Length: 271
Image (cartoon, rainbow, N blue to C red):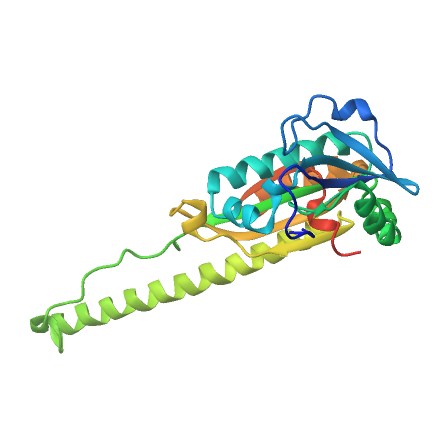
């Protein structure tokens, strides 16, 4: 979050910056609500680039106000969707570098000065993402390893030699079998994740591996997420990416979910 004013009068406005573009058709922003009613979303030129901005009531976008939004899930989702809608509309016109949610300056002139100071980095980011989109890939395997069914341990009267000893050995073998199956399942998950990431990385300009989501986030207990990654892919390689995903599903037996194209949020902060 970027804010830069304490004690602003209630009637004052601030300049909210959504993104930086190299090509922007103002008509693409027509009708967008943005973050504040009554203030149009518009372009703000700085050098050879254009920022997508909106005036917002400064009193409603202070540090304290944003902290309240962050603690209100519904309000935070509303802001994130509004921000994303503007960024997506701008990205339809050409390469676009999204800025973080809640990037605010005291006014247009202060925003222009700050953005101009970072113009070289923005130019490098826009050159990197031009003709590219972000694609997300999530890979799942069954949560449990196939193997012998677990059974209850034998009672004390069944331990020892003879027929009881045989039952005890059989139980221990089943326990060992389950342990081996879990280890093999874990190894398979690691190999599958690495194989898929390696194959898709060959088609991407850049990649990012994220922490796989656990069942508490996915809400799924029957399958385990083993890969959560994003790929910056040129538009001319999208068909090959989708064909590769289909082939990987067939070859590995894993559930491979692909989403996109997205504005490349994950690849604008590294330049």
